[in-house]
Amino acid sequence: KYYHEQLFRSHQMLLMDTATSEFLFLSEFFDTKGDPMLFHEVFSKTTQFFLDSLESFLAGCWDSVGLLLMIRIVEYYRTCMQKRHVSCLDSYLDALQQQLWPR
Image (cartoon, rainbow, N blue to C red; front, side, top):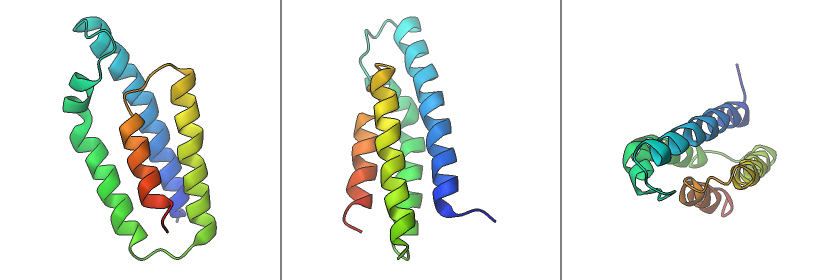
C-alpha cells in the first residue's frame, strides 16, 4: 500500500517527462514554434483526468502533511518545467495549486 502523495508524485513525474517529450516533438514535427495549443488538444483528457481524480481525493482528505507534500511536489515540478523551458503544463500546474491551497 502506498500513500496518496507517493502515487501523486509518480503520476506527476511521468506526466512531466511525457509532456516534455511530446511538446518538443509536436513543436518540431508540426512546426508550432512553441505554441501549446496542439499540445493541449492532445493532452486535455489526460490532464483533466488527473485534476478530477485529485478533486475526488481532496473531498475526503484531512491529512495536512500529505497536502503540504503535494503542494511542494507541484512547486518542484513547476521549477523543473521552467528549467526545461517548456511551458505547456503551466495552466495544469496552476489548476493543481488552486485545488490544493484552499484545503
